[in-house]
Length: 93
Image (cartoon, rainbow, N blue to C red; front, side):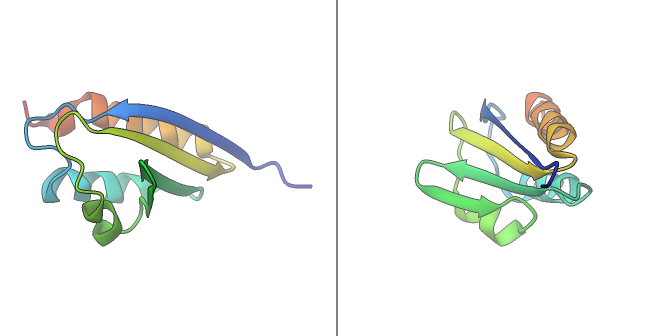
């Protein structure tokens, strides 16, 4: 039996230009610091949050609703950290 936890939270991308290259890279770098599997979900599309190409393929513009899902021992910490990053508008404003 594993002690893995799945945590999901919905966020809205509020920074001016959405999840373009720079904030996407910040997101991927932060997700990569956690051992949990982290996904970013937009509608039917699921992206590995540790892959810059997959995150950019979501084409998440301002106002997009995304689900951050983490599965693993540090899932809650991963989702909380990523939520804070999104809430900070990636320090763009």
